[in-house]
Image (cartoon, helix red, strand yellow):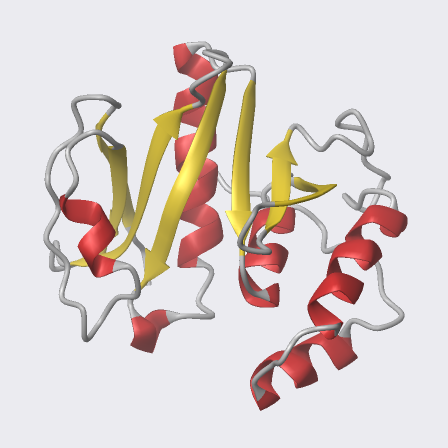
Length: 189
């Protein structure tokens, strides 16, 4: 299925976006107007994913991706990474040098790696792992297979293994125990 990706506005004058809390996690976070927003839409024009973002308070060259949500029934289809990639490209065009995101689950962690983010080794006060683009561990260097050095990637996965996890998260982490980071997605908008 083909999706359309659209940047709706930049911070601090982002639009309100009303999402159904039964279909989307973090739905209430998207009604704030001080964050920029971007969405993915299906062939009917229905929003199936959204991301909210704002400029770092201490570094105007850094954009923080704050909330990313994909409609529950469409998770795992690659919509989230494609939307992140869309925002990343627009942010770079706008002059941001760096993008950061804090993630609270291994699925989001993997999705971010797919679009070139790398684990910084940092966590937020609420135990989210901080990832950054360009990848701070390889200076953007990727092998011929599109992968980045595995040490930082595995360190992030290990941090998740120390938490209370769902069965799906445990299976996901086990499937990646001896592997390296995923190859980056090769998409165009």
